[in-house]
Amino acid sequence: SQSQFGNLSTFFIFNSVFSSFACLCTQAFISVKWFKTNEKSRKKYILNSLFIILLMHILLSINVLIFINYIISYFNINRIYIYFSLISSFVYSLLQLFLVILRCNDNAITFLILKIIQFFFDVVLCVILLNTLINMEYARMVSYLASISIITGLAFIVLSKINYIKVNFFNFNNQKEILSFGLRLMPHSLGGMLLFSLDRLVLGFLLGQESVGLFMAVLQISMIVSALNEPFNKAFTPWLFNKLNCTDKDISEILVKKIYKFILFGIIIIFFIY
Image (cartoon, rainbow, N blue to C red):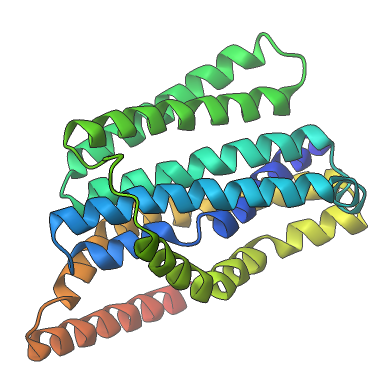
């Protein structure tokens, strides 16, 4: 129903907002540092990023649970969606960090295989749960959490096999550096999430979850563009950071000019399409 779809959409919004806040852009930090440091330093940054993610999610969960009654009344949503959002946002933050490490480490095939496995489990588990659970959106939430948990576990095993997860690399200075980087990017990260989700949150508050469900059903059509753009962006980002790290300023300037030309070309194409 529209109401169920609206509740499910609000769950994914909370999941994105919570993960954006609590991960403190650790995946961006790792992407930037990857091509500027040696392997030992990378491992230190990875472990301390995991610690920061855990710490921030604990702090976030405490604050959300304190104000949960206000959140429920304001957004007209059941508390079970908040609980699921807190858990799934933590797992999602870990997954994004693990996947960016695989991309930066030139493990594109492993990254692709994990994404295919995630899609497979997401669909299969959802179909199974839809036939066993009465509440449709609960089935979708459980399948989503289960699929990202499985992929996070597999990614952790892969990174452990190549010795990128070490438990003896805790470093307070690294943690301060990660926090400094993440806190400065916090307005940008949260601002982007609010621009993306504010319309749905306002709809839920003013008109209820049925209106959110109808709005999201229409919005799904535009998600086709995002589905095409996301894989390119995730593959392009590590390559870009690697090139920008080049000490030759002429190469960096040429690269930046080419990127601007490419963006301008894309804008022109979109203008003529619409």
